[in-house]
Image (tube, rainbow, N blue to C red):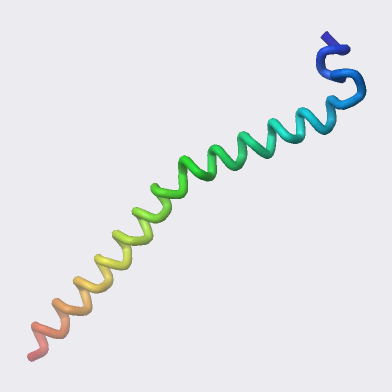
Length: 57
């Protein structure tokens, strides 16, 4: 098992590449959720501003 993890001396590079790939894949999966939350916050703030402006007129 240890030899498999070492991968002939290239284990550090290979496992680091897998880790970077996993982080990028996770970030790519979560990015739309983060963008959706930001968009919903911006829309809610805009709605509050417009509601306040209409009620003050």
